[in-house]
Image (cartoon, rainbow, N blue to C red; front, top):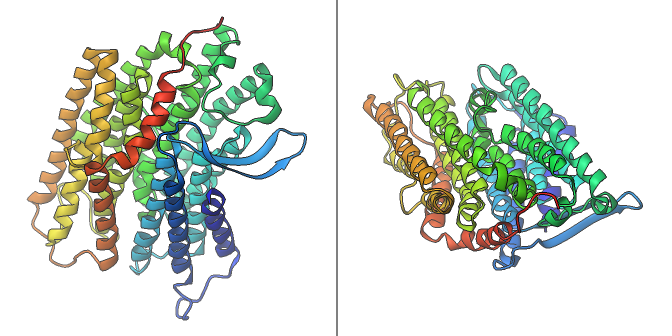
Amino acid sequence: MISLSILIPLVAGIVILLWREPAKDSRFAQRNPLIAIAVTLLSFFSAIILQKRFAAGYGEAQLREVWWTITGSGINFSFALDGISMPLFLVTAFLFLIAALFSYSVHRVPSVPLGKTFWGMLLVLEATVLGVFSAWNFVVFFIFWELFLVPITVLIWLYGLEERKKAALNFFIYTFVSSAFMLAAFAAIVYYIPRIGADFDLRTTFAPEVQGIHPDKQRILFLFFVIAFLVKMPVFPFHAWLPLTHTQAPLGSLLLSGLFLKLGSYGLLRFVTPNFTGVIAEWGQIFMYLGLASMFYGAFAAYRQKSFRNVIAYSSLAHMGLMLTAIFAQHEYALTGVIIQNVGHSLANALLFVVVVMHLARNKSDDLGTIAAPSSTFYWITFSIALFSAIGVPGTIGFVGEFLMLLGISYRSWLLAALAVLTLVFSAAYMLRLFHKVRAQTPDTTWRPTTIERLCMGLLVVAILWFGIAPGFVGENARSSAKTLSTVSPGVGR
Protein backbone atom coordinates (compact mmCIF):
# COMPACT_ATOMS: atom_id res chain seq x y z
CA MET A 1 0.00 0.00 0.00
CA ILE A 2 2.94 2.36 0.57
CA SER A 3 3.98 1.64 -3.00
CA LEU A 4 0.51 2.48 -4.29
CA SER A 5 0.39 5.74 -2.35
CA ILE A 6 3.64 6.84 -3.98
CA LEU A 7 3.38 5.28 -7.44
CA ILE A 8 -0.17 6.39 -8.25
CA PRO A 9 0.57 10.16 -8.07
CA LEU A 10 4.05 9.70 -9.57
CA VAL A 11 2.82 7.83 -12.65
CA ALA A 12 -0.25 10.05 -13.05
CA GLY A 13 1.88 13.19 -12.78
CA ILE A 14 4.29 11.98 -15.47
CA VAL A 15 1.37 11.00 -17.74
CA ILE A 16 -0.19 14.46 -17.38
CA LEU A 17 3.14 16.10 -18.19
CA LEU A 18 3.52 13.95 -21.34
CA TRP A 19 -0.06 14.45 -22.56
CA ARG A 20 -0.91 17.30 -24.87
CA GLU A 21 -2.61 20.25 -23.21
CA PRO A 22 -6.37 20.02 -23.87
CA ALA A 23 -8.02 22.91 -25.69
CA LYS A 24 -9.71 25.38 -23.34
CA ASP A 25 -13.04 25.13 -25.18
CA SER A 26 -13.07 21.33 -25.48
CA ARG A 27 -15.01 18.91 -23.32
CA PHE A 28 -11.67 17.69 -21.92
CA ALA A 29 -10.67 21.13 -20.66
CA GLN A 30 -11.02 20.02 -17.03
CA ARG A 31 -9.28 16.66 -17.59
CA ASN A 32 -6.05 17.37 -15.73
CA PRO A 33 -7.51 18.84 -12.53
CA LEU A 34 -10.10 16.06 -12.31
CA ILE A 35 -7.38 13.43 -12.73
CA ALA A 36 -5.33 15.13 -10.01
CA ILE A 37 -8.28 15.14 -7.61
CA ALA A 38 -9.04 11.47 -8.31
CA VAL A 39 -5.39 10.46 -7.88
CA THR A 40 -4.92 12.34 -4.61
CA LEU A 41 -8.16 10.80 -3.35
CA LEU A 42 -6.88 7.29 -4.15
CA SER A 43 -3.58 8.06 -2.45
CA PHE A 44 -5.45 9.31 0.63
CA PHE A 45 -7.57 6.15 0.80
CA SER A 46 -4.39 4.10 0.55
CA ALA A 47 -2.91 6.07 3.47
CA ILE A 48 -6.06 5.44 5.53
CA ILE A 49 -5.75 1.70 4.92
CA LEU A 50 -2.12 1.86 6.05
CA GLN A 51 -3.21 3.66 9.22
CA LYS A 52 -5.78 0.94 9.89
CA ARG A 53 -3.10 -1.74 9.55
CA PHE A 54 -0.62 0.14 11.72
CA ALA A 55 0.04 -1.28 15.21
CA ALA A 56 -0.02 1.76 17.47
CA GLY A 57 1.82 0.24 20.42
CA TYR A 58 4.87 -0.84 18.44
CA GLY A 59 7.63 1.75 18.06
CA GLU A 60 9.71 0.10 15.34
CA ALA A 61 9.19 0.19 11.57
CA GLN A 62 6.13 -1.60 10.18
CA LEU A 63 4.46 -2.37 6.87
CA ARG A 64 7.79 -2.68 5.10
CA GLU A 65 7.77 -3.04 1.32
CA VAL A 66 10.69 -3.61 -1.04
CA TRP A 67 10.23 -2.57 -4.66
CA TRP A 68 13.45 -4.06 -5.96
CA THR A 69 17.06 -4.65 -4.93
CA ILE A 70 20.12 -3.71 -6.95
CA THR A 71 22.22 -6.84 -6.42
CA GLY A 72 25.64 -6.26 -4.93
CA SER A 73 25.15 -2.53 -4.39
CA GLY A 74 23.44 -2.59 -1.00
CA ILE A 75 20.70 -0.39 -2.47
CA ASN A 76 17.11 -1.59 -2.26
CA PHE A 77 14.09 0.54 -2.81
CA SER A 78 12.48 -0.22 0.53
CA PHE A 79 9.77 1.68 2.38
CA ALA A 80 8.35 1.40 5.88
CA LEU A 81 6.41 3.45 8.43
CA ASP A 82 6.73 3.96 12.17
CA GLY A 83 5.23 6.29 14.77
CA ILE A 84 7.29 9.23 13.47
CA SER A 85 6.38 8.88 9.81
CA MET A 86 2.86 7.39 9.87
CA PRO A 87 1.14 10.63 11.06
CA LEU A 88 3.09 12.67 8.50
CA PHE A 89 2.34 10.17 5.73
CA LEU A 90 -1.38 10.39 6.46
CA VAL A 91 -1.52 14.19 6.76
CA THR A 92 0.52 14.54 3.54
CA ALA A 93 -1.99 12.47 1.58
CA PHE A 94 -4.86 14.43 3.16
CA LEU A 95 -3.40 17.89 2.47
CA PHE A 96 -2.55 17.08 -1.14
CA LEU A 97 -6.17 16.07 -1.67
CA ILE A 98 -7.23 19.43 -0.20
CA ALA A 99 -4.63 21.20 -2.37
CA ALA A 100 -5.94 19.52 -5.52
CA LEU A 101 -9.53 20.45 -4.70
CA PHE A 102 -8.59 23.99 -3.78
CA SER A 103 -6.40 24.40 -6.87
CA TYR A 104 -9.34 23.29 -9.00
CA SER A 105 -11.39 26.07 -7.44
CA VAL A 106 -8.60 28.56 -8.20
CA HIS A 107 -8.26 27.10 -11.71
CA ARG A 108 -11.83 28.08 -12.45
CA VAL A 109 -11.02 31.75 -11.81
CA PRO A 110 -10.11 33.16 -15.25
CA SER A 111 -7.31 35.42 -13.93
CA VAL A 112 -5.35 32.45 -12.55
CA PRO A 113 -4.88 29.91 -15.41
CA LEU A 114 -3.22 26.61 -14.53
CA GLY A 115 -1.76 24.36 -17.21
CA LYS A 116 -0.81 20.71 -17.32
CA THR A 117 2.62 21.49 -15.83
CA PHE A 118 0.97 22.60 -12.60
CA TRP A 119 -1.15 19.48 -12.21
CA GLY A 120 1.61 17.12 -13.26
CA MET A 121 4.18 18.69 -10.96
CA LEU A 122 1.70 18.78 -8.08
CA LEU A 123 1.28 15.01 -8.29
CA VAL A 124 5.01 14.38 -8.67
CA LEU A 125 5.53 16.60 -5.62
CA GLU A 126 3.11 14.48 -3.60
CA ALA A 127 4.99 11.32 -4.58
CA THR A 128 8.34 12.80 -3.52
CA VAL A 129 7.08 14.01 -0.13
CA LEU A 130 5.46 10.64 0.60
CA GLY A 131 8.72 9.03 -0.49
CA VAL A 132 10.77 11.12 1.94
CA PHE A 133 8.50 10.18 4.86
CA SER A 134 8.47 6.46 4.08
CA ALA A 135 11.91 5.68 2.60
CA TRP A 136 13.74 3.03 4.65
CA ASN A 137 17.08 3.17 2.85
CA PHE A 138 19.69 5.93 3.02
CA VAL A 139 20.08 6.18 -0.75
CA VAL A 140 16.34 6.13 -1.44
CA PHE A 141 15.74 8.79 1.23
CA PHE A 142 18.32 11.07 -0.35
CA ILE A 143 16.93 10.48 -3.85
CA PHE A 144 13.45 11.58 -2.81
CA TRP A 145 14.88 14.43 -0.72
CA GLU A 146 16.64 15.82 -3.82
CA LEU A 147 13.77 15.07 -6.21
CA PHE A 148 11.53 17.20 -3.98
CA LEU A 149 13.45 20.24 -5.23
CA VAL A 150 12.41 19.75 -8.86
CA PRO A 151 8.59 20.00 -8.74
CA ILE A 152 8.48 22.61 -5.97
CA THR A 153 10.96 24.88 -7.77
CA VAL A 154 9.10 24.52 -11.09
CA LEU A 155 5.75 25.24 -9.43
CA ILE A 156 7.01 28.37 -7.69
CA TRP A 157 8.92 29.60 -10.77
CA LEU A 158 6.01 29.19 -13.20
CA TYR A 159 2.89 29.65 -11.08
CA GLY A 160 3.99 31.60 -8.01
CA LEU A 161 2.99 35.13 -7.10
CA GLU A 162 4.66 38.53 -7.53
CA GLU A 163 8.25 37.60 -6.67
CA ARG A 164 8.04 33.96 -7.68
CA LYS A 165 11.35 33.70 -9.57
CA LYS A 166 13.35 35.21 -6.74
CA ALA A 167 11.56 32.94 -4.25
CA ALA A 168 12.21 29.83 -6.37
CA LEU A 169 15.89 30.68 -6.77
CA ASN A 170 16.36 31.38 -3.04
CA PHE A 171 14.64 28.15 -2.07
CA PHE A 172 16.64 26.09 -4.55
CA ILE A 173 20.01 27.51 -3.49
CA TYR A 174 19.38 27.17 0.26
CA THR A 175 18.01 23.65 -0.02
CA PHE A 176 20.61 22.43 -2.49
CA VAL A 177 23.50 23.73 -0.40
CA SER A 178 22.06 22.28 2.81
CA SER A 179 21.64 18.92 1.06
CA ALA A 180 25.40 18.88 0.45
CA PHE A 181 25.93 18.80 4.22
CA MET A 182 23.57 15.85 4.55
CA LEU A 183 25.21 13.99 1.68
CA ALA A 184 28.63 14.48 3.27
CA ALA A 185 27.30 13.18 6.61
CA PHE A 186 25.75 10.12 4.91
CA ALA A 187 29.01 9.38 3.10
CA ALA A 188 30.98 9.63 6.35
CA ILE A 189 28.59 7.34 8.20
CA VAL A 190 28.83 4.75 5.43
CA TYR A 191 32.62 5.02 5.64
CA TYR A 192 32.81 4.70 9.43
CA ILE A 193 30.02 2.12 9.86
CA PRO A 194 30.59 -0.78 7.41
CA ARG A 195 27.20 -2.36 8.18
CA ILE A 196 25.41 0.66 6.71
CA GLY A 197 27.66 0.60 3.65
CA ALA A 198 26.68 -3.02 3.08
CA ASP A 199 22.93 -2.48 2.71
CA PHE A 200 22.15 1.25 3.32
CA ASP A 201 19.03 0.23 5.24
CA LEU A 202 17.74 2.45 8.01
CA ARG A 203 17.00 1.42 11.55
CA THR A 204 15.08 3.15 14.30
CA THR A 205 18.54 3.76 15.75
CA PHE A 206 22.13 2.88 14.96
CA ALA A 207 23.43 4.77 18.00
CA PRO A 208 25.58 1.90 19.35
CA GLU A 209 27.52 1.87 16.08
CA VAL A 210 27.87 5.64 16.08
CA GLN A 211 29.47 5.38 19.52
CA GLY A 212 32.37 3.57 17.90
CA ILE A 213 33.26 6.67 15.88
CA HIS A 214 35.79 9.08 17.39
CA PRO A 215 34.00 11.72 19.52
CA ASP A 216 35.28 14.65 17.44
CA LYS A 217 34.01 13.01 14.25
CA GLN A 218 30.65 12.36 15.93
CA ARG A 219 30.34 16.06 16.64
CA ILE A 220 31.14 16.98 13.04
CA LEU A 221 28.60 14.47 11.70
CA PHE A 222 26.04 15.82 14.14
CA LEU A 223 26.60 19.40 12.97
CA PHE A 224 26.36 18.45 9.30
CA PHE A 225 23.03 16.70 9.83
CA VAL A 226 21.68 19.51 12.00
CA ILE A 227 22.61 22.23 9.50
CA ALA A 228 20.89 20.32 6.68
CA PHE A 229 17.67 19.91 8.64
CA LEU A 230 17.60 23.32 10.36
CA VAL A 231 17.72 25.02 6.97
CA LYS A 232 14.75 22.96 5.84
CA MET A 233 12.65 23.57 8.99
CA PRO A 234 13.82 26.44 9.21
CA VAL A 235 14.79 28.22 12.44
CA PHE A 236 16.65 31.44 13.11
CA PRO A 237 19.23 32.25 11.68
CA PHE A 238 18.74 29.71 8.83
CA HIS A 239 15.40 31.18 7.81
CA ALA A 240 16.27 33.76 5.13
CA TRP A 241 14.48 31.80 2.39
CA LEU A 242 11.28 31.29 4.40
CA PRO A 243 9.35 34.61 4.20
CA LEU A 244 9.64 34.88 0.42
CA THR A 245 9.09 31.21 -0.44
CA HIS A 246 6.34 30.76 2.15
CA THR A 247 4.35 33.61 0.60
CA GLN A 248 5.11 33.31 -3.13
CA ALA A 249 4.10 29.70 -3.81
CA PRO A 250 1.25 29.09 -6.28
CA LEU A 251 -2.18 29.98 -4.91
CA GLY A 252 -3.49 26.44 -5.01
CA SER A 253 -0.50 24.94 -3.22
CA LEU A 254 0.27 27.68 -0.67
CA LEU A 255 -1.64 25.64 1.89
CA LEU A 256 1.10 22.97 1.65
CA SER A 257 3.82 25.39 2.80
CA GLY A 258 3.59 24.37 6.45
CA LEU A 259 3.78 20.69 5.53
CA PHE A 260 7.04 21.13 3.63
CA LEU A 261 8.73 22.53 6.75
CA LYS A 262 8.15 19.18 8.42
CA LEU A 263 10.78 17.57 6.22
CA GLY A 264 13.30 19.32 8.47
CA SER A 265 11.75 18.29 11.78
CA TYR A 266 11.30 14.75 10.44
CA GLY A 267 14.98 14.61 9.52
CA LEU A 268 15.98 15.63 13.04
CA LEU A 269 13.73 12.97 14.56
CA ARG A 270 14.85 10.30 12.14
CA PHE A 271 18.63 10.82 11.99
CA VAL A 272 19.76 13.12 14.81
CA THR A 273 17.68 12.45 17.93
CA PRO A 274 18.12 8.65 18.12
CA ASN A 275 21.71 8.44 16.91
CA PHE A 276 23.67 11.31 18.46
CA THR A 277 22.41 11.20 22.03
CA GLY A 278 25.88 11.72 23.42
CA VAL A 279 26.47 14.90 21.42
CA ILE A 280 22.98 16.08 22.33
CA ALA A 281 23.82 15.55 26.01
CA GLU A 282 26.77 17.92 25.51
CA TRP A 283 25.35 20.48 23.09
CA GLY A 284 21.60 19.96 23.32
CA GLN A 285 20.98 22.96 25.56
CA ILE A 286 22.64 25.27 23.03
CA PHE A 287 20.13 24.20 20.40
CA MET A 288 17.28 24.47 22.88
CA TYR A 289 18.22 28.13 23.38
CA LEU A 290 18.52 28.53 19.61
CA GLY A 291 14.96 27.26 19.32
CA LEU A 292 13.90 29.73 21.99
CA ALA A 293 15.58 32.58 20.09
CA SER A 294 13.71 31.51 16.96
CA MET A 295 10.46 31.55 18.93
CA PHE A 296 10.97 35.12 20.14
CA TYR A 297 12.25 36.36 16.80
CA GLY A 298 9.38 34.76 14.87
CA ALA A 299 6.76 36.05 17.32
CA PHE A 300 8.00 39.66 17.29
CA ALA A 301 8.45 39.63 13.50
CA ALA A 302 4.93 38.21 13.00
CA TYR A 303 3.44 40.95 15.18
CA ARG A 304 5.00 43.66 13.01
CA GLN A 305 3.90 42.31 9.63
CA LYS A 306 1.44 44.18 7.44
CA SER A 307 0.61 41.24 5.18
CA PHE A 308 -1.60 38.28 6.13
CA ARG A 309 0.79 35.88 4.36
CA ASN A 310 3.84 37.25 6.17
CA VAL A 311 2.17 36.81 9.55
CA ILE A 312 1.69 33.11 8.76
CA ALA A 313 5.29 32.80 7.52
CA TYR A 314 6.88 34.29 10.64
CA SER A 315 4.48 32.46 12.93
CA SER A 316 5.81 29.25 11.37
CA LEU A 317 9.31 30.34 12.35
CA ALA A 318 8.14 30.68 15.96
CA HIS A 319 6.44 27.27 15.92
CA MET A 320 9.49 25.59 14.42
CA GLY A 321 11.58 27.14 17.20
CA LEU A 322 9.39 25.53 19.85
CA MET A 323 9.64 22.19 18.07
CA LEU A 324 13.44 22.46 17.91
CA THR A 325 13.60 23.13 21.66
CA ALA A 326 11.36 20.13 22.31
CA ILE A 327 13.38 17.83 20.04
CA PHE A 328 16.60 18.54 21.91
CA ALA A 329 14.88 18.19 25.28
CA GLN A 330 15.11 14.44 24.59
CA HIS A 331 12.09 13.62 26.74
CA GLU A 332 9.32 11.21 25.81
CA TYR A 333 6.56 13.79 26.29
CA ALA A 334 8.44 16.45 24.31
CA LEU A 335 9.12 14.11 21.39
CA THR A 336 5.51 12.92 21.40
CA GLY A 337 4.42 16.55 21.28
CA VAL A 338 6.73 17.24 18.33
CA ILE A 339 5.31 14.33 16.34
CA ILE A 340 1.75 15.49 17.05
CA GLN A 341 2.63 19.11 16.28
CA ASN A 342 4.02 18.02 12.92
CA VAL A 343 0.40 17.26 12.09
CA GLY A 344 -1.20 20.12 14.04
CA HIS A 345 0.88 22.93 12.59
CA SER A 346 0.47 21.56 9.06
CA LEU A 347 -3.33 21.57 9.40
CA ALA A 348 -3.60 25.00 11.05
CA ASN A 349 -1.21 26.55 8.52
CA ALA A 350 -3.18 25.02 5.65
CA LEU A 351 -6.45 26.46 6.93
CA LEU A 352 -4.95 29.92 7.40
CA PHE A 353 -3.57 29.88 3.87
CA VAL A 354 -6.92 28.75 2.48
CA VAL A 355 -8.49 31.80 4.15
CA VAL A 356 -6.00 34.28 2.67
CA VAL A 357 -5.77 32.64 -0.77
CA MET A 358 -9.52 33.09 -1.25
CA HIS A 359 -8.79 36.82 -1.25
CA LEU A 360 -5.77 36.58 -3.54
CA ALA A 361 -7.57 34.37 -6.08
CA ARG A 362 -10.10 37.16 -6.56
CA ASN A 363 -7.38 39.80 -7.00
CA LYS A 364 -8.06 41.13 -3.52
CA SER A 365 -5.33 42.45 -1.25
CA ASP A 366 -4.00 40.63 1.79
CA ASP A 367 -2.67 43.87 3.27
CA LEU A 368 -3.93 44.09 6.84
CA GLY A 369 -4.78 47.75 6.37
CA THR A 370 -7.17 47.14 3.47
CA ILE A 371 -8.15 43.46 3.52
CA ALA A 372 -11.94 42.99 3.49
CA ALA A 373 -13.51 39.70 4.50
CA PRO A 374 -16.72 38.41 2.93
CA SER A 375 -20.05 38.49 4.75
CA SER A 376 -19.88 34.79 5.52
CA THR A 377 -20.42 33.16 8.91
CA PHE A 378 -18.67 30.02 7.69
CA TYR A 379 -15.60 32.09 6.78
CA TRP A 380 -15.36 33.55 10.27
CA ILE A 381 -15.91 30.21 12.02
CA THR A 382 -13.13 28.51 10.06
CA PHE A 383 -10.82 31.52 10.44
CA SER A 384 -11.39 31.45 14.21
CA ILE A 385 -10.70 27.72 14.51
CA ALA A 386 -7.48 28.10 12.51
CA LEU A 387 -6.38 30.85 14.92
CA PHE A 388 -7.37 28.79 17.96
CA SER A 389 -5.27 25.85 16.75
CA ALA A 390 -2.30 28.12 15.94
CA ILE A 391 -2.49 29.64 19.43
CA GLY A 392 -3.01 26.27 21.11
CA VAL A 393 -6.53 26.58 22.49
CA PRO A 394 -7.83 23.38 24.19
CA GLY A 395 -10.01 21.31 21.89
CA THR A 396 -7.68 21.73 18.92
CA ILE A 397 -4.71 19.60 17.89
CA GLY A 398 -2.46 22.63 18.38
CA PHE A 399 -3.11 22.49 22.13
CA VAL A 400 -2.22 18.79 22.38
CA GLY A 401 1.13 19.17 20.64
CA GLU A 402 2.16 22.37 22.43
CA PHE A 403 1.14 21.11 25.88
CA LEU A 404 3.17 17.91 25.53
CA MET A 405 6.18 19.79 24.18
CA LEU A 406 6.12 22.26 27.08
CA LEU A 407 5.64 19.44 29.58
CA GLY A 408 8.63 17.57 28.16
CA ILE A 409 10.79 20.72 28.11
CA SER A 410 9.95 21.36 31.76
CA TYR A 411 11.61 18.06 32.71
CA ARG A 412 14.84 19.41 31.17
CA SER A 413 14.60 23.03 32.34
CA TRP A 414 11.83 24.93 34.09
CA LEU A 415 13.39 28.21 32.93
CA LEU A 416 13.23 27.17 29.28
CA ALA A 417 9.67 25.94 29.73
CA ALA A 418 8.63 29.26 31.30
CA LEU A 419 10.24 31.25 28.49
CA ALA A 420 8.58 29.00 25.91
CA VAL A 421 5.20 29.63 27.54
CA LEU A 422 5.90 33.35 27.27
CA THR A 423 6.37 33.02 23.52
CA LEU A 424 2.94 31.37 23.34
CA VAL A 425 1.51 34.50 24.91
CA PHE A 426 3.14 36.49 22.13
CA SER A 427 1.68 33.99 19.67
CA ALA A 428 -1.79 34.80 20.96
CA ALA A 429 -1.00 38.50 20.62
CA TYR A 430 -0.04 38.46 16.94
CA MET A 431 -2.80 36.05 15.97
CA LEU A 432 -5.46 38.10 17.75
CA ARG A 433 -4.02 41.23 16.12
CA LEU A 434 -4.39 39.49 12.76
CA PHE A 435 -8.00 38.61 13.52
CA HIS A 436 -8.73 42.16 14.69
CA LYS A 437 -7.19 43.73 11.57
CA VAL A 438 -9.35 41.60 9.28
CA ARG A 439 -12.48 42.02 11.40
CA ALA A 440 -12.11 45.80 11.64
CA GLN A 441 -12.52 46.33 7.89
CA THR A 442 -15.87 46.85 6.20
CA PRO A 443 -17.13 43.50 4.86
CA ASP A 444 -16.79 42.87 1.14
CA THR A 445 -20.22 41.94 -0.21
CA THR A 446 -18.99 41.20 -3.74
CA TRP A 447 -17.91 37.62 -3.03
CA ARG A 448 -18.47 34.61 -0.84
CA PRO A 449 -16.60 31.29 -0.52
CA THR A 450 -17.52 28.80 -3.23
CA THR A 451 -18.80 25.31 -2.52
CA ILE A 452 -15.36 23.78 -3.10
CA GLU A 453 -13.71 26.35 -0.84
CA ARG A 454 -16.24 25.58 1.88
CA LEU A 455 -15.55 21.86 1.45
CA CYS A 456 -11.80 22.40 1.83
CA MET A 457 -12.22 24.58 4.90
CA GLY A 458 -14.74 22.18 6.42
CA LEU A 459 -12.48 19.15 5.99
CA LEU A 460 -9.56 20.98 7.62
CA VAL A 461 -11.74 22.13 10.52
CA VAL A 462 -12.97 18.57 11.11
CA ALA A 463 -9.39 17.27 11.16
CA ILE A 464 -8.20 19.99 13.58
CA LEU A 465 -11.08 19.42 16.00
CA TRP A 466 -11.12 15.63 15.68
CA PHE A 467 -7.42 15.29 16.49
CA GLY A 468 -7.82 17.89 19.23
CA ILE A 469 -10.76 16.19 20.98
CA ALA A 470 -9.55 12.61 20.38
CA PRO A 471 -5.74 12.94 20.12
CA GLY A 472 -5.19 9.24 20.81
CA PHE A 473 -5.60 8.58 17.10
CA VAL A 474 -2.23 10.28 16.51
CA GLY A 475 -0.88 10.18 20.05
CA GLU A 476 -0.63 6.39 20.36
CA ASN A 477 1.48 6.18 17.22
CA ALA A 478 3.61 9.10 18.33
CA ARG A 479 4.23 7.92 21.89
CA SER A 480 5.40 4.44 20.86
CA SER A 481 8.20 5.87 18.74
CA ALA A 482 8.92 8.76 21.13
CA LYS A 483 9.47 6.24 23.92
CA THR A 484 11.96 4.37 21.71
CA LEU A 485 13.81 7.58 20.82
CA SER A 486 14.00 8.87 24.39
CA THR A 487 15.33 5.62 25.89
CA VAL A 488 18.45 5.37 23.73
CA SER A 489 21.41 5.40 26.10
CA PRO A 490 23.61 8.53 25.96
CA GLY A 491 27.34 8.81 25.74
CA VAL A 492 29.90 10.13 23.29
CA GLY A 493 32.55 7.84 21.93
CA ARG A 494 33.90 4.94 23.90
